[in-house]
Length: 290
Image 1 (cartoon, rainbow, N blue to C red):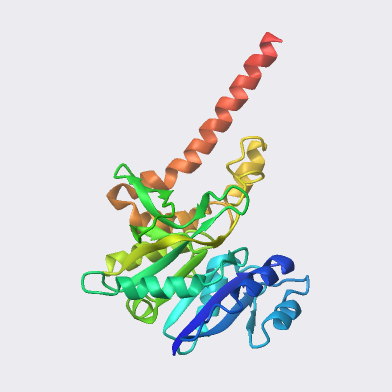
Image 2: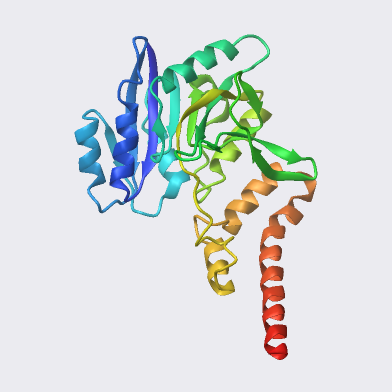
């Protein structure tokens, strides 16, 4: 029996989390057992009670509301105990029937000589358009070592450089080699960092064929990249945990951007400031013309 431990992090979106858990029901199949560890990061909407009603054996770990994704997932992983695979699962994912079995079958297919210890990523699609939203990723080119493009679904497994952490199957051998998620990241980047670290240790990252569920892409509206927001608000948001906090970006670029990492670390903040200055100049020029 293959033992799969599912790791989920959530915060105050009860119905979304419950919908994800319902899609997990029946995913074990005849040859796998599934255990769920969920970090409820300070939810006040009754999430903990609701998920126990859907999945009675779920283990809920409590956060303080300031863990965000990386720390919440690391906390869940710390309680995983014995397993054959970890499954990272975002709580806004709705799995297709048979998704877990498809991931396990892909891992068996790729576990031959030359593939090292294999991470298998599930490609997810937008529930309305069907376009790929989260998947494995690859670097755009050598000149942009920390800029990545999404790998769309194919009929065969596709090798990736790293991955979004929305639906990822990680065998215990990879965890033994790489360790767990780096909880020193604030929120994002920890998934990209994990895949890149795994590859430097001889592991491989593959995207399973087809799409395995739905997950809408997060909208940039209201975020630090939204040009409609005032500059001061964008500067506040870029430093927030869900933005591009300088300490996390420093850790990521220093590890993965090569010898020119300080330039790559600084560039998004410079672009934001330069864009703000140019916008102010344009607005001033329009005022003079008026």
